[in-house]
Amino acid sequence: MPVHSFEPQFMPVGVLTAALQELTPREKRDADPDLAIEEWLAFATELDVECIQLAAALHPDEADVPAEAMLDPVANTLDLREPFTRERAARVAAAVKSSGVEIADIGYFDDMLHENAAIRAKKHAFMLRIFDAAVLLGVPAVCGFIGRNQSLSMDENLVDFEQSFVPLLQEAKARGLEYRIEQCPMPGWTTGDNFHNNIAYTPGTWIALHRICEKHGVGDQLRVHYDPSHAILMGQDTRGIFQYLKDEGYPFLISGFHVKGQVIDAKGVSGWGYGGQTVERGDWVAGKPSPNPADQGHAWAKQTVLCEHELPGTARHDPLAYLQNRTVDWLDHQLAARELLELDVARTPLIVEHEYGPARVQDKDALKPILAGSIAFSRNIDRAAACMYALQSEVLPAQGIPVQGIGRQAYRS
Image 1: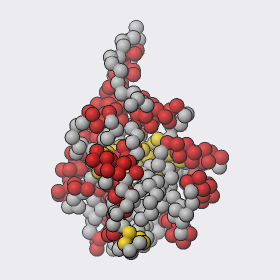
Image 2: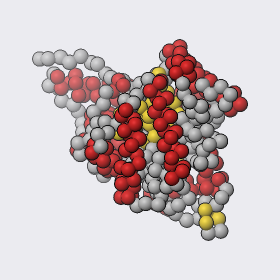
Image 3: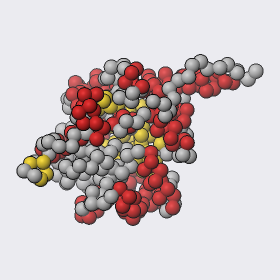
Image 4: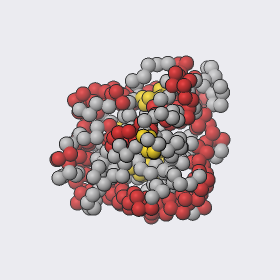
């Protein structure tokens, strides 16, 4: 009888640098922009991660959305106000080598289909600078949103995507890069009532977008950086989503993961449902959107009234919540990824994305044990899943030994 050796495959674990936005004080980093990357790589070694997702964003002086209006303000750890030269890349490469921490990809999370032509052009130009920086850094991918043109219907947005976003993917192809979609629906991104402000929010639209890309020869450029917190927000679960992708012939679409959860507030759902708060949020004043950015931030009640972000490991173990899709079943998440997707597991990063508000302390010494604990949790959950998968899918079947039980099943209520 053949014997298969026990060879579990683990995923590398990393962290998005927006977890600590101002690790390097603004007065120091504005004068010496790459210092922020060097100091984050050094911090990453203290956190014991294999990689970072390098956050990029328009500088606060250039952004069209003020930080006060955002649920989770972005970070411009990668500062591209000035051209990212080979000299700058060499400096970062030296820091990567000395730290032993890789850059998994670059994350730029913005609305690439903005209805204002001038604002859109600015974002697209910035994205191209990120593509160029990724090439110089030897990074394989850029992670971000598609966004939504607020002046168009969802179907019309598919046409807009084909006309204006596909050219960006063609630029990515010319540089040998992937573009990994982050699937948050971004319900509070605007003071309007649309819940879905990022059209790439669910497998149905990932597939529709990918079909468009295939027509233009850029299907290999469009991939998904899956975040289970957004599935919970929309009443979905990871196993069901992965099974759907497999059933539809798209198990290859996911090539990276954000490790971030969501905890549903049952009372909030009872009051407002999964569409979130629709009236009296505080983002409208005197019959029109408030000009005050802090007021505009109340638009996020479309999301926050019914749930709160989870930093992995900080929410209580709750088997009933897992079964009701009210929080992420982390162990089954990692099992399902191996069982249902087409992954190069050892090269697929798990990026811890810290957006749990009460724990988003912006002091390095206070944040370090919080992040370290979550990173250790994420790593060990993945290792447990890897061991279960190796035993159940490789070792036992090779010897004709049955696996016990049924396990969690997709599409089952």
